[in-house]
Length: 515
Image (tube, rainbow, N blue to C red; front, side):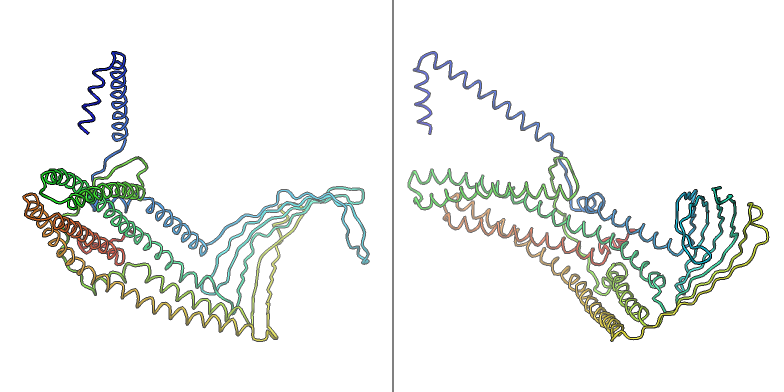
């Protein structure tokens, strides 16, 4: 390469002045282009914000500002309004019903006193207003109501009708509706809906810890990618240095051509690994940025965890916190109640049915508004409705048996899920201790591998070892480093998973429940 450069330089010096001028222009243009490219690159880098974060800071951002938490907050807010709507169903309801006005000018068929029908021209206007107050009765599933209203009828003058004005008042009317032996949805919802709301609130806390667990996973994805990139860059630099030294040794006959080719192959592998590590680091950086909800261009400089906690976790205590804090426990209770409610619905929605309706009130009528409230008379309405199925060919019994079978199945599912839930907690606690021990072992193995690689490299440089032994030491060092980072990642991911399963921080000793 140096010979070619010298020959080319000699040709330029011996060429014409025009060629020299062209060369200077090309050099000036190349310099300008290089400066412009560097300026653009610097502008691009400066536009990207650099975040220097440790694991705890990444987790805090994920638990408060990530898009997943925004969705969880929206779901919690939705469940809050659903619960308030449920509560309103048990409170008095007041409504106003009015027709102002109801005009009718038409020819309609009417039945005459002698039984014949005739078409008569009608012209009248009805106005009415009614105020209605109702209150459901949770214990019985019935309803009581109170109404008051006023009606006015204006019959317009026609050829056959002189016209008239009348009022009908109902100052007060009290009534009730009570179904007997009917499925009481109000009673069952009063049992299940509070559980459902508390379940949703606990799910919000679990969503926060799920975000923390995912953030820790992505944190170590990027941290390992950055450390791998750093190691790949160092390996490339070492491979280039060894290749230059080996070229010198080969030129004086101290190493064989096969050794030189093997080192050249190591250089190419180092270049490929560096490119792959760079791509992985960029991908992991974008995944973490997207999960944390950072919309601008950002680069992360992650700080590895400074050691691991040495505390132990008691299995029974972890199980106790899980039973107190997890939404799954409330879901078990709610599902059992819902299955029981379906059996009650199947039993009471079939067979003998009785409905009782009653109403008592005062009413009056008169030509004027005052007359309508004078001389009030009482009115009573009581109805008893009965429905008795004669033959359904086993349809009602089949529905009941299906509901009971579903209830038994749900009980078995809940029982099995409870066992699996407890096993999961116990297994996660056991893994917590094992993963901590694994970190200590892999850390020591990583230190030994680093020292061995340094000693082997130095001995190779002084010609005491072959390149094969050096490559083996480098490979073992890389494997030990990957094993250490993998064990460190598994520990912290397992720790945040234990937090999610129990909603308790065993390091700080605090409940992870937001009321």
